[in-house]
Every structure is written in structure tokens, then in C-alpha cells.
Image 1 (cartoon, rainbow, N blue to C red):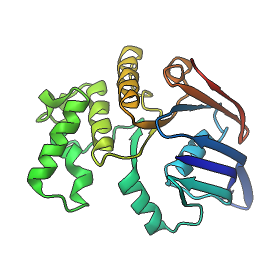
Image 2 (image 1 turned 90 degrees about the vertical axis):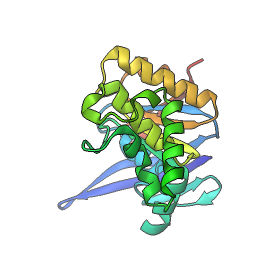
Image 3 (image 1 turned 45 degrees about the horizontal axis):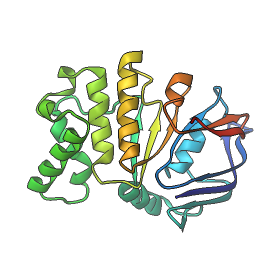
Length: 225
């Protein structure tokens, strides 16, 4: 599904050039659950952004689901993101004034899906994350773990090939974080490919493979079991 070959990425800060990724090569097969780890500044979030087509490479190649995307323009990347990738972040990014159901419906608004179909699919997604009974509650009426479940349901609404998660348990206590990781394991077992950035060893251990970065390079790549 994912194939990066000798990927480089750098950023300009004033007059300085900051190299972040330095020749990263990585393959992820469909159905894998991969955790990306590394110290601050190691390049893990930049790598995740490239995998999620939120950023482009400066050098090297990236193929996603068989398509070459390293030279894709913004419009092409947007199409890939909208149709193939779901995103879960540390900050839940829910709209506070609308309920869980309508938050989950949002990605379908941009696709022109009919209201009755949006509602059906949103309820189905909430059922998938065991939150259908809270569909009419606003974010303020939900716990942190429940809000993250809503965010996961929203990420799954278009049935993406890949779920990308950036510190998905970072704003949760350890027990709730464990519940979210169990949900991720269930989704992965059902066939969803997941690539996740985390700085927590116990969270990474719930994945099936851990890729470790340091100074913009992969220093280890191993299965957890």
C-alpha cells in the first residue's frame, strides 16, 4: 500500500535550511498496523504527513496504493486524502455546537451525499466505535475518550484504505488511551491499515510493528509479536 524510497524533506526557516527526513525508505502492506516512534525532532510527524499526503517530498519517491504521488499537486493530493485516507489527531477537532452524528457526517457534506444517506452512514460509523447511543450529544457532553471515538468514526466514514493517527491518545488518561488502542486493534483486525505516531512505548506496543526514527532516519523496524 505504502512505498517510500529514499525520501528527503527539508524546511526553510529564515535563511536556514533544516533537513528533517534524510533518505527514508519504508514499505507498509495493506492490513498492517504500524507505530512510528522517535524523540522530538526525529522526523516522525513529517513522515506521517507525507504518508497521509498532507505534505510532499523534496526528493525520493512515494507510491500509495500503486499510484506515484510525490509530484502530485494540491488538488490531486486533496482527492487522495478525501477518498483514501482517514485522519485522527491528538486534538479531536470536533465542532462544539453540533452533535456527534453531525460531526461524523461532515466529510460527506463535501461529497454531496444525500442527507438520509449521510445519517445512515454516520450512525453506522458510530455503531462501529460503540457510540451510537451518544449520537445526539454534543462534544461538551462527551468524555475525552468518547470525543476521540467520534473523531475515529468521522475518519472512517468514507471507508478509507488507510487510517493515519498522530498521537491519538495524547490527550487521554492511560485507561482511556488503552480503550482507544483496543478499538484500533479491532479496526485493524477487521482489515483497516493503520499508521500511527506516538511517543508512548506502551501505546506503540499495541501496534503490530514499530518503526523508530532518529535524526531523520529509520534506525529500527521490528514486529511487536
